[in-house]
Amino acid sequence: MAPCEKGRVHSIESFGTVDGPGVRMVVFFQGCPMRCLYCHNPDTWSVDGGCEMTVDEILSAYERNKSFYRGGGLTATGGEPLLQLPFLTALFRAARQKGIHTCLDTSGIVYRPDRRAEFDALFACTDLVLLDVKHADPEGHKHLTGHGQAPVLAFARALSEAGVPLVVRHVVVPGLTDSEEELRALGRLIAPLRTLKGLEVLPYHTMGRAKYDALGLAYPLEGVPPLEQTQAHRARGIILEEIRRVRTGEG
Image 1: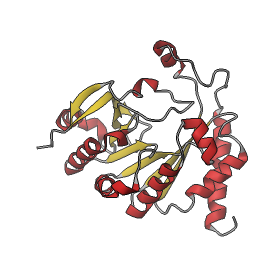
Image 2: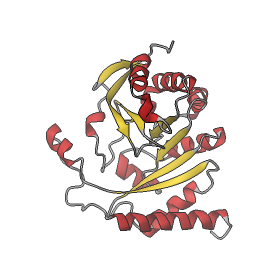
Image 3: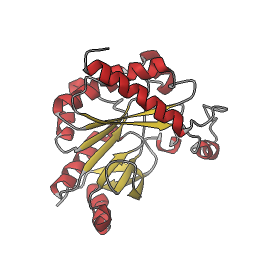
């Protein structure tokens, strides 16, 4: 019987295809401390929003559609799932006991080394982490997200030390994260991570604009055009080249 810990959930997507391998159930956790200028889910910010759900309720919903998830699994995203670390760990532990592949999509921003034992308990039942690295430069990171960069890098190192497979995600925004200098700096940051298994470079888009309007919020990147996929592909090539240079001793 899965534990009955409760957490606050914004929504559940029953047929996700871009948040980890295969077809997945994607659980959007409620609450996020970051205010990324390009965030497309401002409705997940408040820690008081969403609804309460138990581990059993989520996994029961998974079981009802489990035939769709062969080769896939369960992904926790948000918002920021790590804000609800005990609930997230309970969910992933129960999922793993059922043989369900677990994937965490996170910014790592709430990681604290003095809570390492709690995070190690999560790592032990996490099959894959999608880590959103927002900006390579500390000042650029603070401008973009409202928070410092140090917890993100500490979290990435902790994942690597714990042997948890890791895919880095990076959103390329015109004028903010698209310079060659920033992209190469990102490559140098993530090159030492020994469990790095992949790199996803995502083009900035404006599809979340309607949510800001609905919430009565000013859109932070008014006038910034979406990035073309070809430019994201070029950016990925620059990051990968820098990773190769570092790992081969050329950088």
